[in-house]
View 1 (tube, one colour):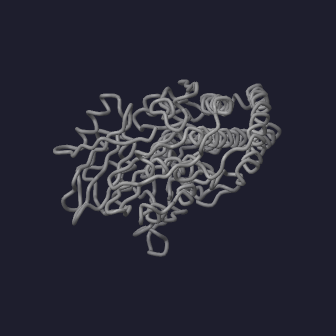
View 2: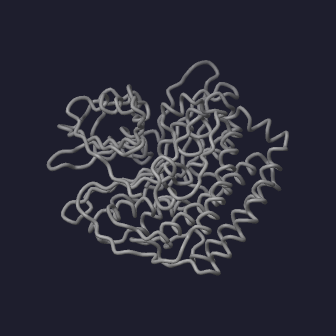
View 3: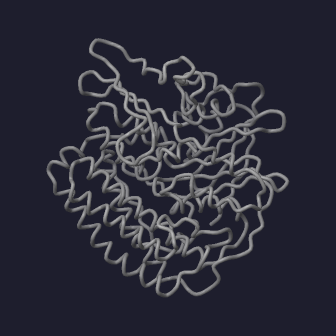
Length: 474
C-alpha cells in the first residue's frame, strides 16, 4: 500500500498538537524544516495506524522547543538548527549533532565539547572517529568513574554527503540509485521508501509487489545475520562469528545470482522491478532459503549455549521499555524493549498484506534480547520469502507511473526499523526531500543504554544496536 498523509496546520503550540496525537496512539516519526515562501515551516510527521502531517509556519529565526514535552524530538530539533539556523527556544541539550562549524580543530576550538560531568575520579575517554574494522566514522565521548560509564555522547556527521539535496530537482527523474545509497546495507528499504513517494496513487503490478517483498526480506535476513556475526565477534566467539559471516555471504551470493548485485542495488525500479524472476531464480531462492532456516537456528543455539557469552550479553546495555517509548526507538532495538510496532503489520505495503507475518517482541532490553529478536526476525524473513514464492503468479512486473505535485511520504520497515522519505513537489520539481533512516532516532537510545555499563562492553552494546553512520549523516 502506498502511504499518503493527512495535513494539519498548527495554529497554536506544536508541542500540544504532537502530544495530543501521541496520547491517541501515534508517534513522532520525523520533524524537519523546509523553506516556505520567504520564511520557513516545520513539518512534524506522526505515524500510527495512518500518517498525519502537522505544519507549523516559523516567523523569525526561532520556535518553541517541543523537546521538554516530547523527548524524542530533541535530536530532530538539533538537526533543524544546524541545517536551517532555526533555534528551538528552551531546548535542553543543544550540543552539536553533525555540524563542525565553530568547534572544529582548524577554527581554534576544542574538536569535541566535553560532557560537562565533573567530580573526584571522573574523567573522559574519547573513542573514534576512526575505528578498527570496516565501519563508519563516529566519535564517542565517555564520562567514567573507574569502570562504570556515567554518560556517553555520540558525535557524528563525518560521512556527510548531501544526499537529501541531491534528491531535489525534476520529479520525473529516477533517483532510486541515490536513495539506495542513503544506507548501503539497507538499499532495498530506502529504494522502496523513495518509490512510494513517486508512485503515490499508482497501481503497481501484483507480481512486482511480491518480488519487492522477496528482495526486502532477503536484505533483512542478510543484515541480521551480519549483526549476529558481529555480536559473536565482539564477544570473542570466533567460530560462531565465522559461521554467521558465512551465512550472510550465502545470502549475498544468492542476491547476485538473482539480481546481478550483492546488495540488490538496481533491482527495484519506478513502477515495479527492473527484471522478472525466472523459474530458475525462484528455484534457487527456495532451496537456499530452506537450508538457511536450519543453519540460522543451529547458529543461535551454539551462541546461546556459551556461558561466557551469556554472562556478557544478559543485563548488558539494557534499554528500558520506558526509555524506548519516550525516545521512540524503532526496529529490533524497540521490539527488544517491549514495542510491537512494525510498519509491515501496522500499514502493510508491497505484498505484506497478503502474507502471514509474526512480529517478535520481548521486554529484556539487553544485548541478548536484541540478538534474540534479530534471530527471530531473520527466521520470519525466510518464511516470508517462501510464502511469496508460493503465492506469486505470472504477470507484468512494471507499470507506467505519473508523479503529481503535493506532499508525498514513503514509510517502510527497514532491517533497522521504520524509515521515512518525504517529498515536497511543486511545478513538477522536488523542492525539499527529507530522509529519516531508522538509525537516526536510535542514537539517543544507544546513549541511554550504555549508562551504568563498563567501557569494554561498549563494542558489544554498540553492535547489538547496529546503527548506520551513513544513514545518520546523509
